[in-house]
Length: 73
View (spheres, rainbow, N blue to C red):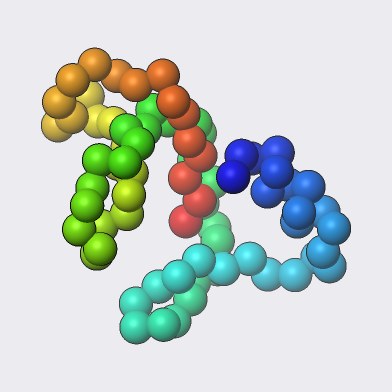
């Protein structure tokens, strides 16, 4: 989903709290929206990791990817 697709969906709904998953089925209110950052797609196969991983200059292997994503948390 892109940022614009998300915005369109949210604008169709009532103005309510937005949450993200937390530990043991609980939720937290979204309070952080980060600037777009480089992301490596489909790099994790374990079920407990997300499929993708943000590229970090100090720890990532390979060149910086061109794909960008916005992290919400």
